[in-house]
Image (tube, rainbow over all chains, first blue to last red; front, side, top):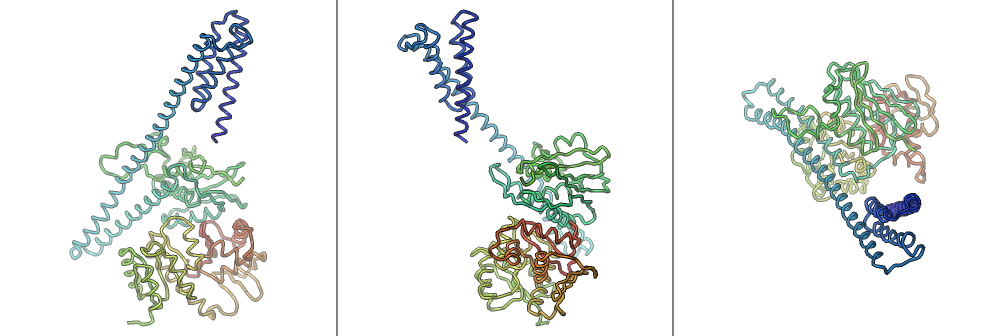
Length: 348
Length: 238
């Protein structure tokens, strides 16, 4: 990688210098003056220092420029005269330009990196704040209800107790889903982590998703359409399973009035395209742009302490698909309802 | 007091999980022993001879896998049910390859736990008492495997299988209810030196499932455990 960059830098340096050399020869003929020549070389040195890594190429370019000017454009023509004070002075100016530009670019690059780091840090802090806030609500229910039952065991009738216990179980299930999503995020967080991609049979993936989904939402049927032939896709199956379940559950939670939920997979060229569509209420215009980032981007928690409607689920989906090198989209269907689609690369 | 109750050993270091497992198992009329370390688990195992072991993998003294290794070395066939945290397929595969019979992913509900416990106990009964499968035939819903004539029928209709598909089906049927990992099936069907790998198995399995008329999300015969292996359903799981 480093060597490659250096070759690229070297090529850039050589080409720029050669171009400028010819430009100078041409200009000398047209304008019949030499005042422009050093300026054009200074411009070249500036450009090279700006575009290449580190100081090396900038300094090389400045020295080469001095030599070129000395050799071709000053008296004695086409011969070196390296000890004249004029030559030394121009060499110094070129060097200073190269070094200063180099320093400046390095600093800017460093700042950009720090900015990206801060942005990541901000996202992480937002995530932590959002999650801690969201965890408090179900914990309050579980803690409160269990205390209520223990402290009033004799005065509560069976029906009341069962109701409280049922709510505790519901909120525990919500907590389980939340923790699963968080685990998925930590598995791909950092960006450097290589996913453990294994060839996964499409039919088996869909099978696993449907069984898991039915356990959570037994009353929602899913219509499935996948290709007949054997398709194997390299992926982290556990994470993609999570993506599909999150999107299906999102439809159950948010697509009001939905009667049909469809999961289809098609292949096109080197991609498999997954699409989940419903015929519910669709996604409102103010949500659709932020649907995959909403959870992380909100800076303030809702004041009333209600649970965030922009669940963590879709943000996790986007992160997982991005880590797989695919794309995820959400859009409203022309016939009503919403669709989520994402693509994964097929086996080469 | 019924003295014929099944004895179940629960090895788990989290006292709350131990307590709820004990409560639900006792409520279902099982006799429950508990241990909180791998070492005491092995001791309890050899002194009480339980019928089933529920094993947590993250134990304070040793890895739970060590327990499986120890008792399998002693030629014990007692079913072991692993309680696994969701960290990935690899630890499940490792536990199964060492000789665990099944796994439940934490957090689990009581209904799921009880279903797995009942299944594991039933399987161990089958294998110690082969006469429960009479007349050389395997039956599951409307699927019948006639071992003697090597014929598969579904609702009386014969299904044509290739030799490999037949071998896979029979292997799964012989271990009904138990998850067989990819590596195990490949070793049993193609022999230990085969390098064809998982892909060959997956292709054969896809064809087999299609011939049996399985649809995604609706498996009547073979359940696929994503990234781990396959398992033959049991009659009562429906």
